[in-house]
View 1 (cartoon, rainbow, N blue to C red):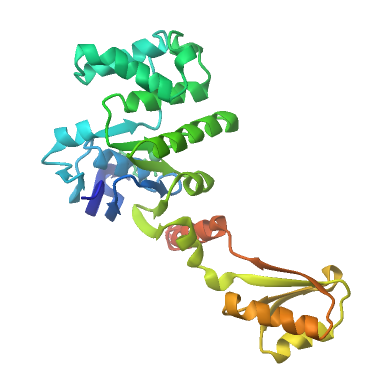
View 2 (cartoon, protein in one colour):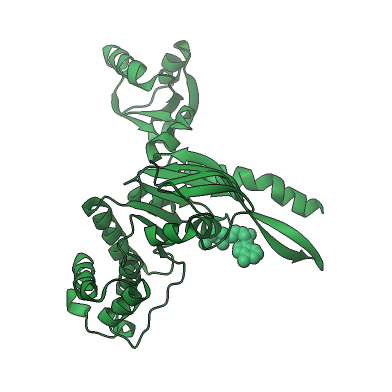
Amino acid sequence: MLAVEARGLTKDYDIKKDGQRAHLRAVDNLDLAINKSEIYSLLGPNGAGKTTTTRLLTSILQPSVGGAKILGYDIVEDASTVRSNVGLLTETPALYERLTVRQNLEFIARLYDIPKEDIKPRVEELVDLFDLSDKIDLPSGSLSKGMRQKVAIARAMIHDPPVIFLDEPTASLAPESAKIVREQIMKLSKLEARTFFICTHNLFEAERLSSRVGIINHGKLIAEGSPEQLRDLRKDETMTVFRFSVWDDVIQNFFQERHYEVLEIKPERKSISIFINDIEKETPTIIEELIKQNFPMFEVRHEYPTLERIYLDLVQSENLPRNQEEESS
Ligand SMILES: Nc1ncnc2c1ncn2[C@@H]1O[C@H](COP(=O)(O)OP(=O)(O)O)[C@@H](O)[C@H]1O
Ligand SMILES: [Mg+2]
């Protein structure tokens, strides 16, 4: 059974445009299949539809069209079962600042109807898991932002939910705090067989934390896969750079005679960049021949397109038609 399964999930908001009632399609025909214990990141720019997707999947909002299941439970028909099976860290979580960490967690535990005798051990277990034991009796308002965010994540897990949604868990944090929170998420995902669904606009976060990334833009999923698979989308943009200790124009001939496409020559760097079809097979042959012919080659490297480049290309090429429409209207 899948942890998260969405079929044609769609959400329209009613909005007013030029004084007229209109629809805004925030989530557009989304299909998702996320296995148990996966850490899945939904990556996309602001306004892409990440938060709306999270609200749909946690039964806070109802879809306009399509549907989804969490661990087999329908987000509309079994909404209350869905809610007890999910934990949610919202985009801007607020703690009761004057209450201590313990009091914040106990308060939420009571809201979830956790049996009275289980509350104390559960809170202490969580505080331990989040390395917050020395902060447990401090007012949460006195903690750093990173620590407060950890308390907020612990709070989202108070009822021991198997599927946890984290909406922009580090977006409002300084780099040091973001690092603490990311390390905590990695620790949680290793320790416990839980499914994480993380919304982020931060590519490096998605890459570091998750086994699979879905890229969303204008409510649509435009690419999905492991970071490696996403990189493979642009395998054909890898270039191979050879560097020599002495530059000679015959180097260029060497590659051209062998029908390699020359992408760049930098005589001042004594380097040439070419495109190789089958990198694994052809690179050793080229190296062998260069050495046999006494070319003073001392460096070979493959420059794979970065995930950042692929992400920006995907999102920006998607944005083009819309921007042009807006300009012309
Ligand atoms: N309650 C709402 N009413 C109307 N439009 C909304 C509402 N919430 C979000 N939107 C719009 O829906 C789109 C997706 O928003 P959101 O899901 O918050 O994206 P993200 O979390 O990726 O930034 C945006 O265009 C946003 O302005
Ligand atoms: Mg959002």
